[in-house]
Image 1 (cartoon, rainbow, N blue to C red):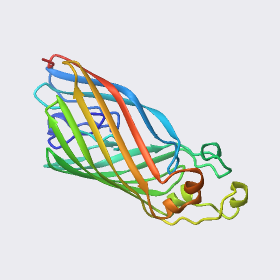
Image 2 (cartoon, helix red, strand yellow):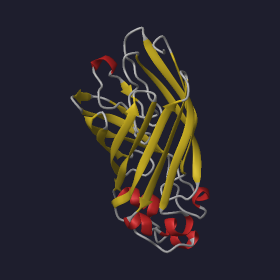
Image 3 (cartoon, rainbow, N blue to C red):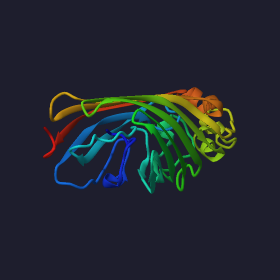
Length: 265
């Protein structure tokens, strides 16, 4: 779905895995099915924000007619399978974090620029119904910090008629990331109207994610997801969060899918 390659992926449909929510596969064979998806998602405008910003949900999947569409969680980074054996996969990825301005926060604070975060992922599919995945990323612009995520997914499905997944999430980030989004430097405190605060790195948030996709006809389907993160540690104690944001971080989205091709029966 607007999600990632799951348990069984053989050499026949290895390729770019562009996750949540954009996915491209390139299997061989003329008798294929193609699924297109379009919708809208909402997520905090910056880490710790209580305002949501809208973003587009896209999906493009192509598989041989005798295979199921692969599963991918909506919160994964854009990734590529460099190494895949059995249920284990590993490879490079890239993620993007939008900028944060004073207008976004509602008070005068230094701007955090647009962040490009290259990194790597490791994933283990224990079965068709359970997998774990971790990502490590480094900002080379914007916040310039390190961030790591870990999660597990239980996947329930009836081939491509319906799919439901759910699982926990954990986020860690370093001092530099925390400084960018959660610290208030003494020199900035008076203009911001906030107390000075030095946020140290550590566990940033814990939470969970659920997603679903189901067919309502031979061609048309619905995709949706919801995610909740609870800020913890210094991120939760930041005056930026306490005064202008929220410890509770919600993301959600929904859209329509259309499946077509010679393999659609």
